Amino acid sequence: MRHWHVRSPVSEQEWHRYYQLRWQILRAPWNQPEGSERDELDSFAYHLMLVNPAGDIAAAGRLHQLDKTTAQVRYMAVAHEYQGKGAGSRILAALEAQAVAWGCANVSLNARDTAIAFYLRYGYHSVADAASLFGIPHVQMAKKIRLSTSAKQHQQWCEELSKTWQETIPLSVFMQLNIKEFDGNALRCQAPLAPNINLHQTMFAGSIYTLATLTGWGMLYLQLRALGLQGNQVLADGSIKYFKPVTAEPEACCVLQNCLGSLEALGDGRKVIQQIRVQIYSAGTLAAEFSGRYAVLPHKELTA
Image (tube, rainbow, N blue to C red; front, top):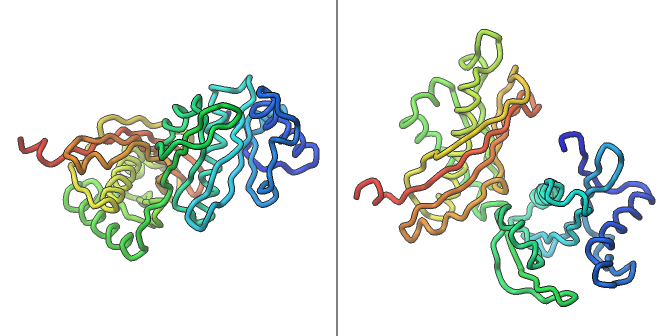
């Protein structure tokens, strides 16, 4: 689906097809009339659709703000022939990114009982039972997309993280790894090309991997600080896909919505696991993507 596009409907025909998909998937099977797939918030909401190279709409979804801190996903619909192929995840990720752009800290939604497993895979957790619709049980679910902490705390934690890297990971010093920015949602780290270059005058693959793993490790560290928790962080497993050579301005980016797995059980003395995705850019162009499974061990596990 790399050549498929996520965008808002533009023409009158696209809007018709967008609403038609919502009706076909979300209303028609329960004998609801056309028009029931719309509501009074549509004119104020943010709408997205996934379009394939042939121009077919594979999936659709909508986002609107409940208040200054929370956005709600509604009307997620995937055409039958594209279900189970990643179309829904593309729409959901793009809606979450828009919620971040609005400055929201949380995303909520009401999931049908058959869709709960899907949302759990993408970091949502159940909050409470929601009202049934057409006799279908629903569950209210939520996901945090920004740490609810101040810019001053972010700066302090980033300084502590940089010091930890320098004192415990000598390679980070040689690579000249540094934190460019952390806004509560996205952690951006850099490493200049010069000390990490190979004979082809591109970034050494090992340096790309290290930049990605340490950025993911750093995002995990920042989440723990926000929760007031401590533990021993380790990378349990990791893989990386290289798309293009890194020829200039290497930068790693990790966003909170791509960190999947609750950390709160660490407070009860239990090991926690989080799957984290990090993207590597070369002068603003996506060059590689890393996926790592990180574990946080209670301190007692290493001293018992």
